[in-house]
Image (cartoon, rainbow, N blue to C red; front, side):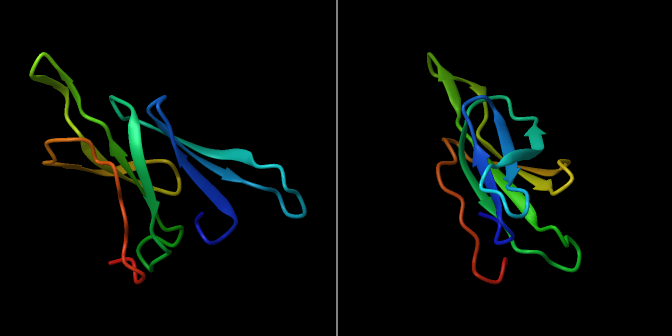
Length: 107
């Protein structure tokens, strides 16, 4: 959860979806679809709002795809703004990014 009533989910369909329940409702509706990963997602985390990113950021971690010892899709972390734009891709992991966590102050 983002702290403002939104729910963020990562999926095997290679997307992250941000859901929001309209005020007074318990039925969530898709607010933003984040697309751009090459392979299944394994993790997601949300940062609190900052002066630079008043809507906070969403971080998504991807599985690796290794076939017969050859890496076909590198595990990456993507950083998204609340408008649905990927603002950064972090590379360097050699296996699935299975957990993402942020400190309480978002650092």
